[in-house]
Image 1 (cartoon, rainbow, N blue to C red):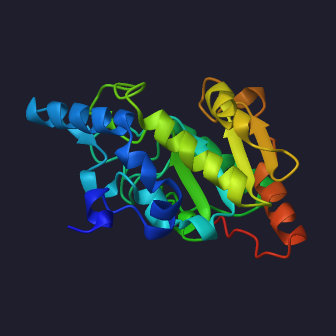
Image 2 (image 1 turned 60 degrees about the vertical axis):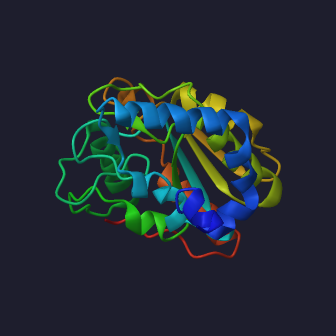
Length: 228
């Protein structure tokens, strides 16, 4: 068994940065918890091979933008390891619908209605949930089990070892998680969450997608093609 297999197929570039987390007591406790949940017959999302999907689609050196979410979706067939994203053919969750509305308003482009954000991930947009698993139909059920420490390690590694990234922090939860980010090294964009409960209080009209691209262009990079 290779190291990558032992750690759930974590991309080698991320393994080099945060692979040591897997040997820490909190990750051993988390692994035991997940095994107990499966043994008890509980359905866990996303499927095992997709837990580290965000890291595997966006290698460490290729990250340009980080969009921080909270939990995977807990409905059948929704979660596939990318924050805010759902596989093609799955109905758009309300927050994602609002994200697409803002993109259309901000950039004047038409979104197809598909919710799979993998094309963003493949362009260097790390779609990172704070918690990487959830029990079916039980929102927040795997919070405070260790995932937050693991994803904090990922954010800390990006903050320390990369420069000129864009961190997108929607809502108070993401903003607290992003407190370690150095604003002198990276662009930090904040707003309320795109949830229907809050989107009208500052998410709509925040023009953050155009701001991201303007920043990348200023850094001599290709802008993100946001159209799905």
